[in-house]
Length: 266
Image (cartoon, rainbow, N blue to C red; front, side):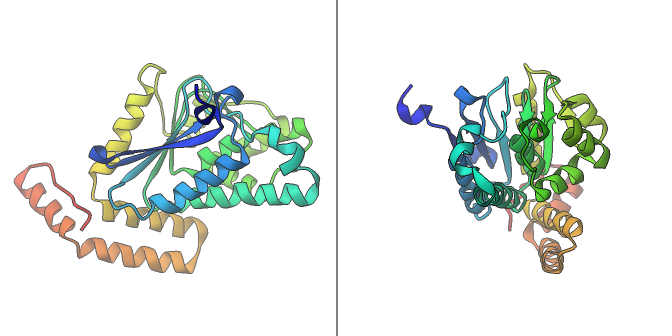
């Protein structure tokens, strides 16, 4: 393996024929722990992919066996030493997660194996999560003695619910994927041998729908969750644009003709 390939990084793949973009965490030596550099790469991807009209859905994943061991603790001696550095590091993670939440296209996180700490934050920043039965969520802050960022706790609370979040934070015990499925934090469980294929099939199903409608729906969900007036106005405008689109006319025609619609995003 070349030094560049061995360096902790995120890999980006465009699947133009499937209208998908795929972001993979690549740090196998540390069970796909997310370094400060990787957080910056994720943020840059999130900024860039929203403007790519050829992408209709985004998949976030890593290698099978371990989704992520969380933040790369090898960074902590410098990047998170002292309260000022800790605050800066937390800002980096939070700002990146917010950028992931703001990706214009729907995001689907494929979880194969354990998902720790900051890895769980990244997963929670995605719109949907699918997992394998061996997936489990762990937030080990209480075992490390660090103060978990309030904004990250709020994200967990929105996705996992208050009771499960309390258990994650107070006990540092694992939340199994089956339990996360039960409370809606995980949308589907797939066996390991078919998980990737099923996740991509779900992403392709999203990508096959009218992109203007889907983007408007995502804006609406973000506006409702945040209460942000500007997002609400943008969501209303996006919904109106979908109603006036050629895709809406195509959808109506395809329904009447009993055929698959060919949506172009216009």
